[in-house]
View 1: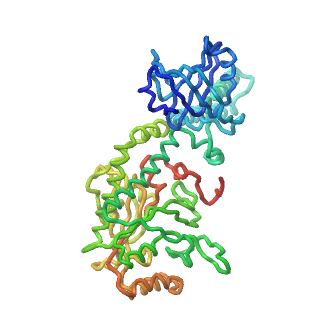
View 2: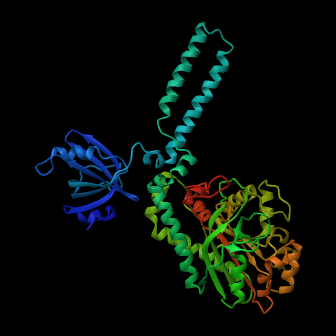
View 3: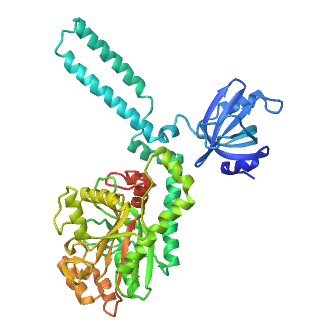
Length: 503
């Protein structure tokens, strides 16, 4: 049976079969070195001419194209000096048999080593080139005031030529643009960091499900083709539905509330969410994975906040405990500072946050929604003051929340609603919902929601609805911010935004 590279330390001096991609090949006389990769793991394999390995086999190995899938038989041995180019640095495989399972065409549109290069190296190269450009601009400005044939003019031109040569040599690393990466996504996804990112993303979903099931929630699946906007507004995709129009769900909001009205008490869903927002930013997608929950509470909506805070602590602890290897692979390419969080989770009130923002130099009205800049400023202040990158902000102004949000009974300008923040950006929006049918109708009218389009939703509240609340979380955004990757497209396998519908 084939073995995995990660288990080879227990196979020293044994003959094993391996299957993987030929990440790199280096012929050297009667030897061919092959770096074999399986997802995040890699090992050096050596095809060496011997009594059992003919010279033709060494030549055959040398001609294998990069990224071909190959099958290898060989003996696992320890090495005297660490092999820095692979993850298994202290052993190698002495190859006795080799087969090509599937050849990769050449040339490839993008190289794995270029896609996997540590961001630190690219940043250093960029900074050095910028420094050279700045000096060249200064010299050009000075040259324009000198006689080109003068001694000083010649010196300046010589310096320009030297800098141009230095710039050429400095740009030794290929910089792969975002579009090039996404246009060749199936190749780019093979990098160890990407393999780790999507394993981590999978685990965030698993930990979300695990915590909620342990706390009495039921997983549900709601329609994504709906008759009206679930969140109100115009940011919705229209779809032809037989002889009429339908819409792609902006969230499972209305249906998860209807499930609470159906006495399901605590529900959650993991599913696609569609937003037709014309937002070309680092954190917006037209389609993303929503992690949604809704729950009946006994006495106060703060019970929902306790569940949400506990949920994220469970996710953070689970990733730290189970995926240290994957986190290190991501950190190697995209260095980031480990997340700081406190237990129990910090809960701040909106008026206090406004005060903190103003004291830090930000501008904000008492009842304004948070801008992106103020979110980041608040995140910075909270980290400095409370030592956490994760917190809950409660009591948002009522005017900036959806129609189904419960007003604060003590101050009608505020609401029983909240957002969750990670590294200074919102990752979850939620609230206590209006459960009184007459108040719900009034709130819908105030938001200019056509009642006929949400009749089934309104009807669900006519026959008794328990007090309840919940929230909606964006999976890709959570992973992006946890790993501090700066672009949600890095955590969306095949992202959809204003400009991208393929691959």
